Length: 393
Image (cartoon, rainbow, N blue to C red):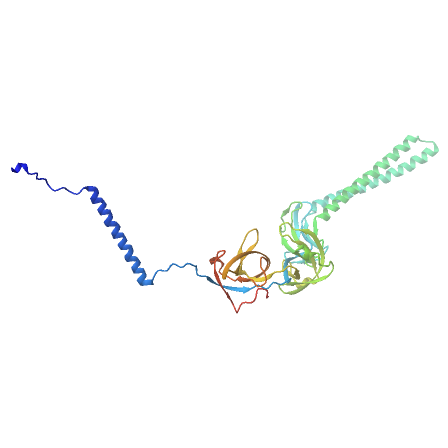
């Protein structure tokens, strides 16, 4: 056999697809080895990994609910003291101010002069009007004398009736001129009188807007006068409480300087759309006990005949439609769970609130930490021995 008869073939190279598969398998094995090493490391540092079948209950502080059937509230309502009358005083006609008789802070009495305009022009006109009156009176006297003479001549037949009628007409005209001149003089006197500002009532000057020599326009406020001797307080009350007050009865208000006696003068009976209150008006009996603008408070007791209880404000979370939510720890199948309930806040005082709603006697109300709680969450209620029960004040 010749060498050419033998089949000599070169060795075959691995296919590229086989190499890629082998490389992928190696990468997978390395990743699994790394994951196993990580798990073993965590188990060695933190102990064996255990997946809990049940979540750990959250420890919460609770108080026991004990409903009360009604609530007596001592409520305070505030109001402002003001003067019964406050007036902005000015001249009815404009002119130059000749004299200012008072200043800010001065106390005045009714009828006292406060300011005067320059009335020299008006007084000159009044002198002229009075002269016209004198002239008209003289003419009227002459006309009446003429009427008498003409009547005497008529009786003797020396004159006709027409002459008498003409004399009577002249006398009537003279009388009309007297009336016109008198009316003009009276108008000037009134203008001179209105050129002076007088106090319509006693009080204190609180504003002065002009000085001597200034030109005041008609109706421009020159002074502000406050009646300090007659003060009142206006206080907004709930309509139910306002209806219980007696008009004419004395009540004690509390001011910055102590107790203030006030007599109830009026109850408007109209509910303010913004404040939802009825305005009551009290007359201050002793005006020296309080100042204008001072804040006064009226204390009244109100009975809320609705079952409810006091809870800490920390036990409330904002709910829907103006209501609030609380969480109650309830035992269900041997497990304590947090269940929400809607309540309405009737009264709030500092860090507590009186509520009514989905609460029953004996419920365990969670006191705080509501941001950590979800409905149905397992909890471990813990009564706080230092906390008061939910109905105590």
